[in-house]
Image (cartoon, rainbow, N blue to C red; front, side, top):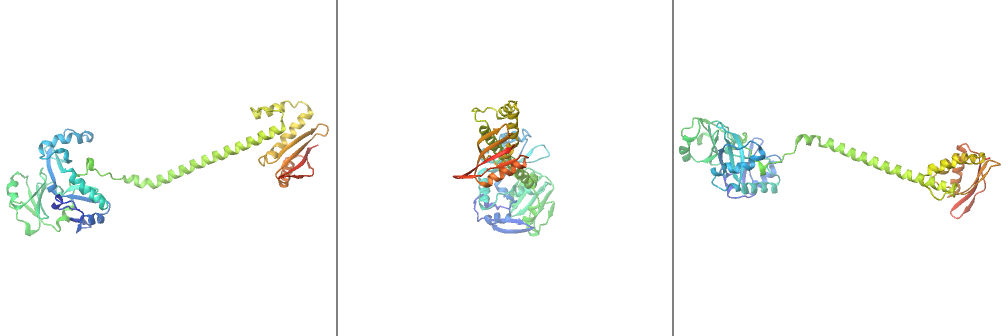
Length: 375
């Protein structure tokens, strides 16, 4: 997109500009041209907005160059360097570098207007600086000659100016214009044009998008890998969530078993009022079963404990009686319903125990029955 020289006077969305796209040129208001340009477009500034000079850079390190550059060029510029944006160009044959200076506030105004109209430019360049670096080039565009080439100067000139400037310009002198505009004296070689803006847009110049105006382009490799990395990240989050949920479930289940074991232990050994280590205390009771009858009791309890705990301790033991003579264990149990008692009886039988169930009776919301195990 080419800004005309009038852009120096007005920063307006309805200023007519030239938009080059697909080998064609359209004249559009700036705001409409931005909307039509897409996401990756170049803003070409008129050379009238730019001052060109050449200096020897005090350092090549980018970190220090931005700080040292204003001091290197301030004596070559007529304006206060603090209000200028400086862009370093290509090196010259004598070791100096071309530097382009443009008013910072003016450039920022056009970029802000572009952003408000749709998108900011991806590149900032100058029309006269687009000319090939070969001798002195003069290119007719928008009613004036652009002067560029391998020399330092980047200017906008009229026919009468050329006679005063040409002796300071390096050879060869090459002009590019339509046949009816080839009026400059001393031009050594003329080249034709199909369309001035299209021809000029084929070339590249110094990038002004440096420092504060640098355009942060997204990393294309990162853009290609982003969907895959997103899926990996999502999988990792889901996996972590699964492990956390599984850990919570197992911990909750373990707490439920621990509470059920403690409840059963207190029912079997009500004389133990203090529980420190349930496993150790139960093992101690087993070790204390030195009498044949007591050993038989603990053996029967060990076989029946799994069946009693399988339903999450919904069946509670109200009374326990053991007959050493008969070798059976009588339990007075309480359950939520008859079905819970029947499931308990089936589990005890499945554990290899002889089970006899007495008559069951309803007591409020629960059912009581007497079970005789073994014998």
